[in-house]
Image 1 (cartoon, rainbow, N blue to C red):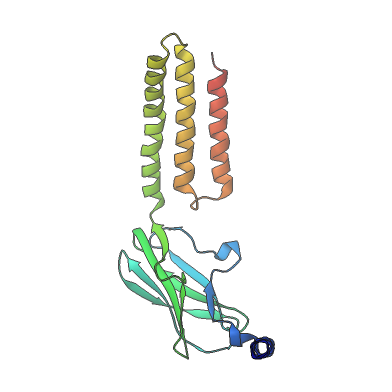
Image 2 (tube, rainbow, N blue to C red):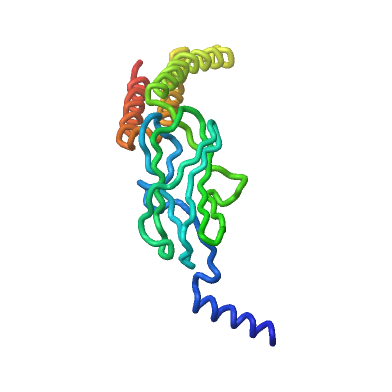
Length: 218
């Protein structure tokens, strides 16, 4: 009987004071254009945004982005849009990242001293890379050349050693197709997030057109 009474009381309190049972949260915004990126360019200004909600309405004492690697840095938030009760957008202005692989996390400390972190798990971090378009083109160029030369050559050698009675031109043609597919994959993976879907789609169409030409040649 007592257990039922306390359960009913808890339900009534949660309905009367919705923020009483809800801990503050810090999470990504739902809009795709405000999602945290996995890839940035050096020496460019970026605005990082997260949504902070506190149904109790406690004032934010500090809100910062902590870069752990490659260099330990701290960035305080620049501005806030909206109210914390309904979900406020916190904005961090970053005046350029250094090149390399980065790990970091966001944290908010409210007026009561409570710390809210993103990612919530202290063992996890926000990871991203910083590289210039020129660096990407150099890496992609090397990868594409390797794919277009090494893969067809190795495939041809293996195919001929396994089936010496087979058609050499068919083996060479299939090796070239595999090389084109691998080169396309290198391009898409390297520039995903750098170029929009139209550019990536055109690259895929171009690769498909080349494959059709290779397949139809005698």
